[in-house]
Image (cartoon, rainbow, N blue to C red; front, side, top):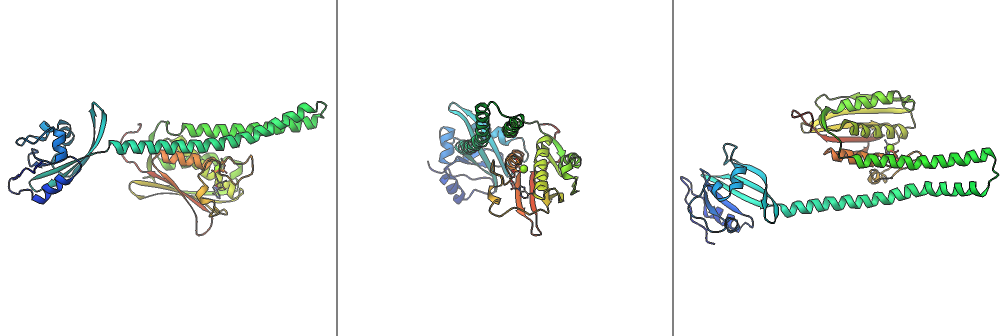
Length: 353
Ligand SMILES: Nc1ncnc2c1ncn2[C@@H]1O[C@H](COP(=O)(O)OP(=O)(O)OP(=O)(O)O)[C@@H](O)[C@H]1O
Ligand SMILES: [Mg+2]
């Protein structure tokens, strides 16, 4: 395909731009000031089904691109937009880049279908891997108490004449192990619900305050001093119940780390207009550096059997990620653990999605 020599009114496109457009592996075309196509590179000519004849308007040659780009005025300004085209081989996802040139514009079309497929496969693979990991943890968590229940039942069956006290101890042991299994299964059902809860806009401090109201009634927090510095502009989009669960997990962890005595400081801020941060800091012993990389793993716990399932932070992490955010953790230089929940900040828009 030879480059069509074009002369745009007033300012012709330099040969270097034509050569550059022709070298691109994606469809690229040059438009004049009225949005008429004046040059197609080989990939664009192949898409158009032949050589360029005359100066057809973009809409005539590529109706989808014309429809995607027209409407915004001035339409030949700098734009980037996505488009999904239905083709006999299935949907094709394309990204259109429009860049003004003197006397017109250059439009480049990149096919991102394969990239999207890869992203979806990657996400799916990661999800399956974590599911497998999770399943191994669940089996481990459930099989220990089940084995304990089984041996206790065998002991009770083998000794029919046991005293009522021994029998009672045996049953209490069985009940404690059943409770362990129920706890794990309850927390796991929280896990599976992440992602499909209804969403609305709300001030993140409303959720923090509601959690604090509940904790103030909890005797385990009787000797914990909690301060909260809110930021009224920190509005987020999400599910308040699920985010409250995240804060509960952080507050309970802090209380447990401080053995029921100490201070928790909650500070909300928006360091940039697009992001909200809620910092939850305690003055407990902090986290051993070797534990930091494992903290969000399902079933990672340093607590004795029956006191922690090791699911609190992994569920919280899942919830915050579902909200488009992230959790950071570090030991504060002055002591204690410091968790920061980052969330996208929203202003304006609809209340319910
Ligand atoms: N504020 C904190 N200070 C010190 N260590 C912490 C703190 N928060 C969490 N950790 C550590 O992280 C581990 C994992 O916490 P996570 O909340 O996931 O599980 P858990 O509290 O052990 O059990 P669960 O929350 O399921 O009852 C804890 O066992 C503890 O060792
Ligand atoms: Mg916990």
